[in-house]
Length: 455
Image (cartoon, rainbow, N blue to C red; front, side):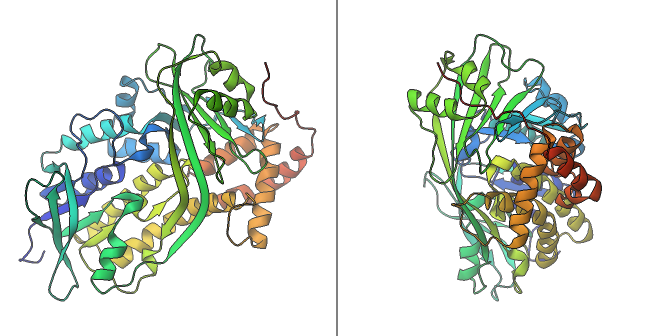
């Protein structure tokens, strides 16, 4: 390492991507410092810096596998906190277009849990690493660089309450995991570099979430009921048990293109009624609300194309939502952050200060499939702006047909969930045998789509 620098890595942002980055950095660096504007120690609820933390979250199969490998026994910790993992299809009732997919035992785990719970448990593991420190309630002011702007040498920070002046934190490596509000594009411009190009898919999504105490168990042996939003049925719902056995449940409603689920009691229930899975409405219409509904708006999925930049300062990397912020209904963000942490670990074993271009190219290859999966699905909504190539139209028509066929065929449910869980590439759905099964089964009479319950 250069003599003028200290053997330290600094991670900007203490949410899940930052925690994963800090953990793998600790295998190489004798000091890792995580900087965040929020209070982190002892926090068990939603944080200001994670505005979507109040809403439904799930850790899909590949993310669960990576985290369990990185933190052995993590699943036991989650279960001790009252989280009940289950089979990604066999223990979840998935509804598409108002019809229940035939459940299949995939052998893949899904972890339905709140974002604060999974962050708290992962953070508790990271905090046990002696040479990882957390600098809480500090704003990130900017980057320090060499005179020629070719290398980042640290960051400037300041206490969030303004009680102290700006402090410089020297570092060999700085990793930005500050999320979709990342200031790295602006910092690059200030340093004389180009900003990364951005791909956007404007979905104008909103989540509205409320918790209820129900008098009877709506789930039975299942862990969740999910009404997936589709172009034909664009209102969705994610319905989960909460930790504990006191009948507490969480219901997150989703609407796109400005069709926001209301936060008032009557409006919320009417929206639930309109979701084509009446068992959800029947479960909550007479249930006891335990809090007010809260809304989170997500205007667009954004992918920053750092891999396309020809110049980038050494000593700086970007990960997580700061690179690619996915439409949250597909539950890809945490899993992709975990995948990126694996790539970071491999790069660190080659070079304590990874080459940015190589790192960005490698994570871009892993982002391609989940980004295409979500972006193509979103372009199925007529009001979403974007080019609808013949490929996009063909894939959306085929996936709709596969979902109809999966109502009758558990093997197609399994195949679809393996792609949704980031285990298989989307191309796996186009294998000749699956295409044949899709066309054969989708032609069978489908059950009548469920209609909203009425009093």
